Amino acid sequence: MSKLIDAALGIHPKALSLGARRLEVLAANMANADTPGYKARDLDFRSALREATAARLEQTHARHLPGHAATTEELKYRVPNQPALDGNTVDAELEQTAFAEAAVRYQASLDFLASRIDGLRKALRGE
Amino acid sequence: MSLFRIFDIAGSALSAQSTRLNTVASNIANAEVASSSAEDVYRSRQPVFAALLRGERGNAQNQLPGVQVLGIVESQRPPRVEHLPGHPLADENGYVYFPAISTVEEMANMLSAARSYQNNVEVASTVKQLMLRTLQLGQR
Image (cartoon, rainbow over all chains, first blue to last red; front, side):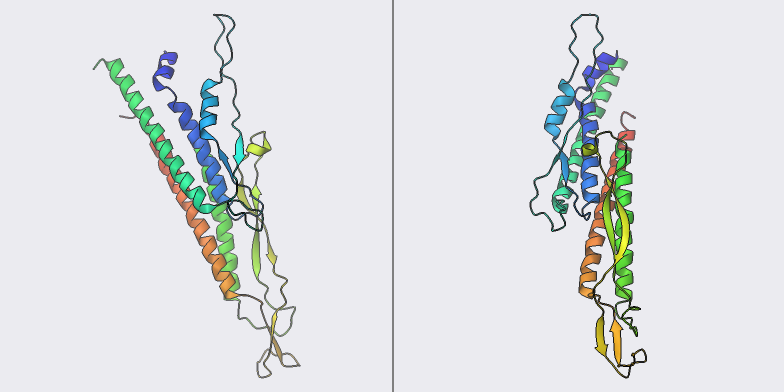
């Protein structure tokens, strides 16, 4: 049953949790926009999502339980456009637009999930 | 839910920026306060920000820091000295000491702090909306 629900929901739960993680990274960048020496970071969403969906433990026997390898998404440092004299590399405008984009993507994931759940519910009711 | 942590991050930034706004207000308010000796004169105050790491995720590189105010430093700039023999606070040579505060600098600092504050308020309110929508997922 849970496998069926997993299959029905597809990639979206993972995209949602990665999206939340990316929002967190961008929020930390914006919070530290005036902290001397702080280096802005970001999450490579595409590769992190690929890693999160592809990472499975290999099953060498049919009766092995499927396992999921723990993935540790690597944060990467931004290439600074114009670093400040105090060593800070946060570009507030860039972070703002990235945050807005990440928020919209998060909402998109939410909408996809909602429609999948709706579909599942309709299928269960037999409407 | 990891969205909860954004409130901590944005909240720490709000408190740091409001400390900065406070010091700016204090600096501007005291910019013209005269004194009769170089030691007693008001010195401009500036907060020192630093990233606030919490020891939760093992890898330090992947930690997402908030902001903390490490302390408030007083400027060591020498005070402005004016020769005003008629001033009630003049010393025996007729000199009066004023704080070395540039109001223009402080205003620029205030604008920067206010912008950063707004930024973080925006972050917190966006995240609040996203969280509420997430909680309503699948309700019909």
